[in-house]
Image (cartoon, rainbow, N blue to C red; front, side, top):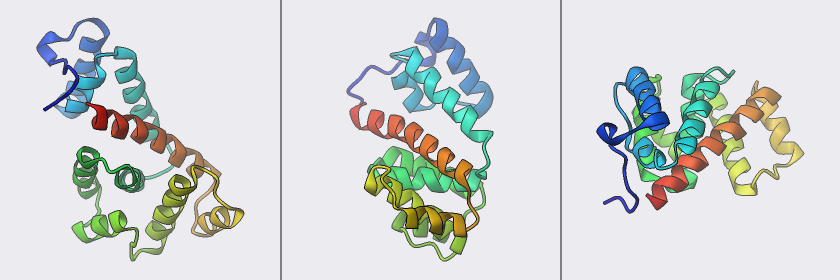
Length: 166
């Protein structure tokens, strides 16, 4: 049971209604998270804008979902874990790969480097070591990927924490 008001699509007005229409057009639905964030349309717009910008980055859709899974696992957000388990499967990850990502132990070397680095960022609150960065670069990633990971984690922090409150 939500603790905060959920703005249903037929109740949305102004900017919230406009953003709901964008969600409906893009995803065919208005997610429960959006119904809560719409209490402050600027929060919903910020979240949706980040999502659009992240999709234009260098990380693949599967890699973005890996980072989202790592962050949601770290933040213990069951709603986001379920959502990104589904999208990771749609983006080519097998059920076994998804579970391995969630447990921090993928078999694929590049996935393992991504999971390890993402976990290190979270565990150290960004105070990763030079060795962490070097290992990530050795796996074929660059500085742009690091910046994207932090941006994805910022977006996941919004949804993970809001889901805990909502």
